[in-house]
Image 1 (cartoon, one colour):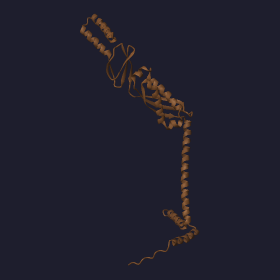
Image 2 (image 1 turned 120 degrees about the vertical axis):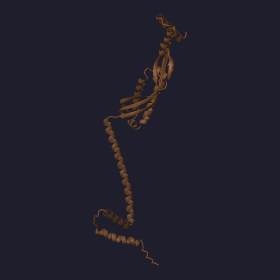
Image 3 (image 1 turned 135 degrees about the vertical axis):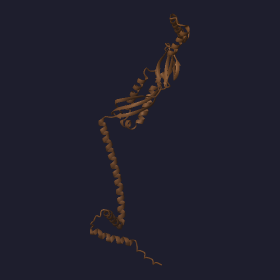
Image 4 (image 1 turned 90 degrees about the vertical axis):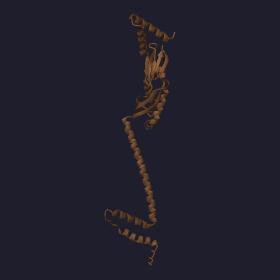
Length: 285
């Protein structure tokens, strides 16, 4: 006999005997029995829920959103699985990196159940298991990474954790959407040392840039000196320009050596003579 038919027969017989003893009309008795069956059999699942149902100890069905029926006593709901994206925070304290630096790392994992049957039957508590697997995978990743890489390239570390945790949880019907490292804390003494190192690197770079600028300036000065050596008049004109620029705003009086004045008097006429005689003015017509 079908288990459902047997169950209904037992329930109807028991209820009929009780109602007959209480002298309740048959129609009322049937209505009461049906109402009781509907009350205990009718279930409703939300849009994000999956109900895993066993019948006589064996997997019967996985029911989704909406109304569905079960048979009391024979059917049992062993798990109600939430298929929305979940977040779980986890951390690793005093974990050693590949270069033996102790760090404290905080991270968060985003996951969801894609197979309610596996999540209900393949593991006792999938939420606790995810937390344990995430912590173990985080420590393994820290142990295989250098501190500099862990601090500078978190995206690669996030991808490694996502793939590692996802591979372990796939057999439980759980998919890992993303893993994000929120903070990497290092000892205070090491922070000071790294700060001094960074400052020294910046000072070194500044000195290199300053030295390059000085070399370029010196090259320009050498080029200018060669130009002035070939043309002394240009040197004197430059000197006069410097004197003028120095005194035009402040009204400063500058004393020049007689030798410098004499050299200007000698060099400038020679320079102008080198340019050739001036053309005479043409008579106006």
